[in-house]
Length: 99
Image 1 (cartoon, helix red, strand yellow):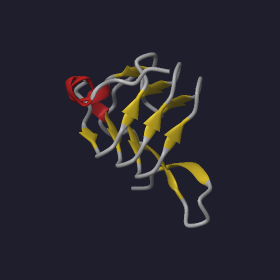
Image 2 (cartoon, helix red, strand yellow; image 1 turned 90 degrees about the vertical axis):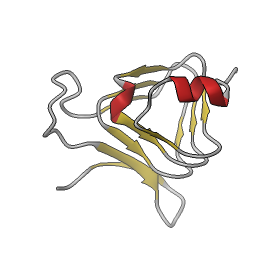
Image 3 (tube, one colour; image 1 turned 60 degrees about the horizontal axis):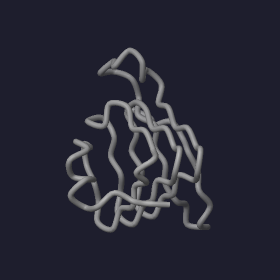
Image 4 (spheres, helix red, strand yellow; image 1 turned 60 degrees about the vertical axis):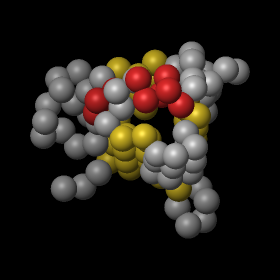
């Protein structure tokens, strides 16, 4: 598995990128300007990220995962983002954001 360099990650045009982020060179990110990835996070091979996504610190998108926020196709400014993070019990959870 090959990961993008820090410079390549910066060139993706993500809304926000944390420190120590690993993104596979074989993943697909649709509309990266609406996606944020937190510190110490990883996106593996063949992942698909679409829509307004906010990945918290220490998150991992495993191989072949698809994360698609509601309204991804419409690019609606009012659509809620999909939040992904780690709970205090270290379980990964994905929840829709609340206004």
